[in-house]
Length: 439
Image: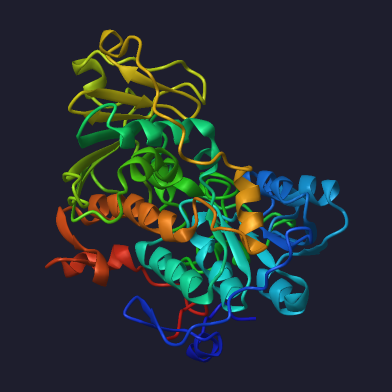
């Protein structure tokens, strides 16, 4: 069973991709159900983060669970004995096409695109984990296909559904901190650059290694890649920037209505051909949006955070996952520090007695529920691909600039680094033989 996505399949799905753009007639979209009727959901990748996503779908009809690693999937399989179990998502989709309304993809980054596109071609609504896909081209392709097929989508940026981020967006949009021209966002720690394996043990019986590798260049199995450290290998993951960037840049993206940068530059330790770095800095320049000025967004993966924290005496927040600050939005009248679970206006004295603006963004019914409701004909989820696609593209453009080694002007419409054809290899890397996208 080949992983190839053929031209015939594309045309049969009502879409043709050329030079990164979808053209052709409109499709009828995915099947929708009444609000009181349950969705039939299939989940691909059900260990780790995927297990939480399966739990998020538990109120609907779970009809199929798919994972290439029986051991990794064992907890979900035991917890949900009813759904049919598969190793190969292609067989699952082919055999259960008429029974599936919606698909959840929670596999490693390099295996998001193929199952996602196959499911959407078949008219299935899609929930996909961040950073949506493994390359900028893949993200754009998925975003355009979802729009053309009229499908309900959601990117797995779970904190996007919280009240905290809504208050952050309202504060910025109300003008509480004035005009914003600069943002600093960061992830602490120094994860990256795993050791290169020298010896290769046998593939465990519980793992289908060939399917796990999927569209990436084949290599022998090693636990340095699977089940978790794949994040820090370029063939499989997108480094700490891809891992956390969609979560953290979400604050500024939503609050400032950002979309595509016009210039990107990055720096860090010498580039390794196989592994992602332990630290990295990226500068994104965004154009003016209406009456809003241009914005410079600084992203960094640094153990101690960006220098602005010490230079301006900014608090770091507490050490908890929800309480540690990851962004500071700098305005002409003050700053707003953002954590997943809280935020803080700075400096304290300037905002003493501050009255919050009226709440204008409706409360989320729950991050998963947003998508479920959208699948049943409700309004689009707040992290649907039309919003989160450009966010995810920007995150991965940071990796492109770092690996390419030169700054570039970004032509978002054509997915090109202007005058830098060498960057194409990182914008749209090739797939392994048998997994090509044949257009």
